[in-house]
Length: 168
Image (cartoon, rainbow, N blue to C red):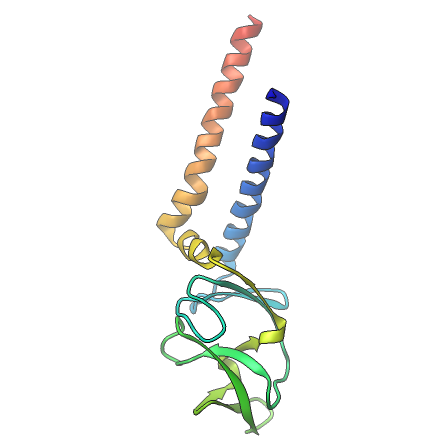
């Protein structure tokens, strides 16, 4: 029974370390809009409910180079509010120049820079976006990463002291 408990504790600790490393990397890679870019992927937390995703979902979006008519995409609804992510189908593509393209999504005109990705290239993790948002704040990072590491560290020190006292 004690062996099973030790394995379970080791597994929980390993998962916590993975979580802590992931959150640390995300904090270091987060841009001013709250988006995290890791290689060819973006990580975005949904802060508003739309037709496709719920508030609190964490989206892992594989980059798309081009978007076409009838592609279902998610995009920032406003250039001033990066918390609102919309969902819609592209009805028209207007290539302005070599750099920018304007898409008609519903009744809105959206620049390519504000399109996050094609829905077919998105993985969604329900509810984890709320934890992600909390853990990327200073207080949340302290509560979810630093404090547990300190508790584990103190526990290990106490275990070492007890073990050395038993041997003497």
